[in-house]
Amino acid sequence: MSLPSSAPEETRHRPGAGFWISAVVGWAVIGYGLRGLFQHHVDTRPANLAKFFIGGALLHDLIVAPLLLVVGVLVSRATPERVRGVVQAALIISGSLMLFSYPLVRGYAHALHNPTSLPHNYAANLAIAVGVVWGLAGLVIVVRALRRAH
Amino acid sequence: MRRFTTDADAPLRQGPYQSPLRDERLAAILGASLGVLFIILFVTGLYSHLHQHPVSWLPVPSRPVGLFRVTQGVHVAAGIASIPVLLIKLWVVWPRFVSIPPVKRVSHFVERVGLFPLVAGAIFMVFSGIANIAQWYPWRFAFPAAHFWVAWVTMGALVAHLGAKWYITRRALRRPSRRPALSAADPALGTLAETAHPGLSRRGLLATTAAAAGALTVVTVGQTFEPLRRLAILAPRDPKVGPRGRPVNRSAANAGVLSSATSAGYRFKVEGRVARPLSFTLPELRALAAHQANLPIACVEGWSFSAPWSGVRVRDLLDMAGAAPGATAHVQSLEANSPYTFSYLDDDQAHDRDTLLATHLDGQPLSLDHGYPLRLIGPGRPGVNQTKWVTRLVVR
Image (cartoon, rainbow over all chains, first blue to last red):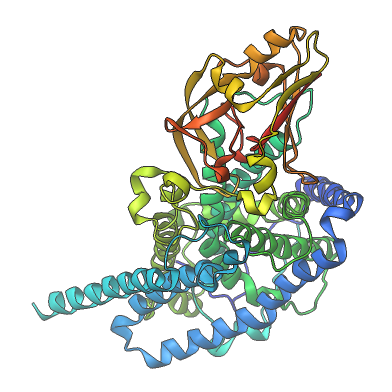
């Protein structure tokens, strides 16, 4: 049982003492972190760090999230209802694997000439991992179809 | 108590963008999971920080010997596993970033302003951690300092967010049977929400998120958990690949010690607050009473291995030099002008029976990349503190 997101939310309490106490404590901790960032500016390079801090959130909210939205709509249009859930699951799992492996496949660490970094062929191994995910997804689809046939 | 409804008219929650999965129960379950992961990450991260920036009022224990290996292995594994949890959580709540009107009350404003450090911080922490274990440095800041201070910003924002979402999360986490059926209150809405829809169900999406986290764990955790080594096909290190079958974080070439470590003029000295300063050549060091210990080397980047090391005990050297009981020491590397030139041994660590200045690994002389001619290896320490190419013990 779930609330559709366009429905009015249930009523709730007006923010109480808990809200304000945690807000004050939370912002104090944020302040501590920011003070540390600026005090150690030689190491933290606040201007450069801000690019990644703000850039990461903007990249997600303005590019990645809308893109996923479009992918989601396309998947729901392009897949038959019976296999849609399995395809969505396989996409999410293989997408997570690809995202994590990106710097490994690109091999950035090789610039350090440390022979023990990145000992594998990551493009091939990623293909294996993604292949296993889609293989399992295919198996689930076939097993379900066979069950329905009986 | 005041009754109000929120955001019924937000455009991103309508039409083709609307998924019945974007509900508060899923947001609550994913949020709680992410909260647990972030607390684990914060605590294990602080522990690693404490090792690298020791404070006298909270000494780190040297026993059990594998403690840091476990805490840091958990830190990196939890960080990797949080990728899908964070992304799915953001997917569920993303349409809420558009709120009409943007600000309703002071508390609403405070809550929404706090979302920026929370979301930006969470993305930054996971991204910078993943990039760092892949040794990808697209930035100019020093990773440990940035990762540490942004952790405080993120955790502060998490505390504020917990307070703002406590009530709604608790309500959403309650067993569905104890909540009134929506269809009872509004048949039309209830039917829309409760009818099965094609595609992943809420339970299915949660299971998928767990499976994605599990898959990432299976293909990486073998870099520190040896029984799963063969499955670790996407781990940045293999605990059996490297000079003589053991990985290193920093090579001798990168540290710029190739000539100084192999120089015939190499000496190891014990100096500082000692009655008798000492100086040894490498053959003299190897002639000293050797002690063997099975100790893990656990890199902050999340890989580790355990192996037999042998060499001279630091506490024996302190005794030979006539250091005061309770003496502490700094171990100095040939690697100059690096954050890792010195490593600190507190009283407890300096006098541990297994804290060694090792000359051998796996019964063979150290390779250059493993710290030839002499390296520090002690129980319960992060690899970054196990200084290599040691040339001096400065007693305090």
